[in-house]
Length: 516
Image (tube, rainbow, N blue to C red):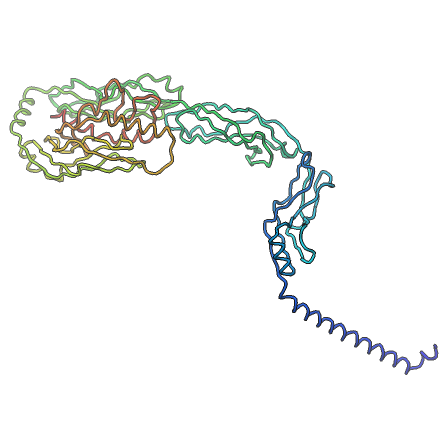
């Protein structure tokens, strides 16, 4: 045999056979590959891909004694295979993604997300397919509940007290490591511009030291919270003093505030220290006749605000005989001039309401005074207005105020205007509605008609009865009708302040009446 193998021609024959076999092998593989490619092209028309998003992940573990963290709520599964099987799987919706942790010990683990109820004819890809989970012992502890609220969110003029919580303690359950992070257990309450005691159910949350919410279970989930809210305003009397020097030959005989009291708003301890606001200066510099003067009310130390912000003081003067005779002579030589269709405008509007002047839209006026002054007076020198600053929702009848020069007096053909007030759409509490209704009732009852005569130097002044400026002792209402008769409806909100600021026209009328 060895001799045969040593011959060259034998080796050549063997090499030729090996080369032939290699050739056959390559061609057979290519043929099979071509056949498979053909089969794949034939079957590709019947295959498809479906992506299932938000597939819930079920976890199997001892829920009574253990807590598991790190498991995603959902995964994404991509299915590939025959279209008929894909359609059937998607339609039945009995596929599941799950993680089995029953046989794992406490600690951290990398586990595979598995699936079931999916045909073996489908290729399945799960994302994520591997997750890191932590298995811990379940534990429970009791914590005291603290009410959380912003004391500054009560209505102006009110103060929130200390809250009471029932039940006082709750049970927090979770992993031991999370319970160790619990720094606060709070019941959060929104006071929502409250003006009376608030009682609400509040959800309890457990927070870490950075006020991040912890993933733990709280029992009970809600508690009852009661927060007392009390009025922190009171009425105090006022007193005025003369400041400045009147005109030549004029003596001041009386300084009489048309408002006996004002409302002060502030902390309880500051309110207790204040029984009166006195020595309010009234500047009478250069005054020559009796008139009403607007005076700002100072805010005492420790007090947040005063309502009304301004009061009207009637200044009574006594003149020498020659000046009195001169005035009587001027009165006897006075003439009258008529002005037709003077427009009526509204003043003192609040952004919370919409105002509509129902009637009249224009008024005639007879103006009486010295001829020289009447000759100079034109229609543009007279304006009519109606102050709506203290009105609530509804229809109201209010005085029409005339603004004209000091040297003349005026009589209107119509002394009152009818106005409709509607609330703009906004959130509000039942207490606000009560305030509005009470305010509206008081406004309708206390508003007095225009006297029809008067003059004023400042814009927005005109004629009105004294009852407009000085309420009766029964209602004890401050300047501008900013306070309602009922104590528990008093507030120091912005609408009251606005009413005070816009009360100038009514007081101006009294100025004209007194001057004449």
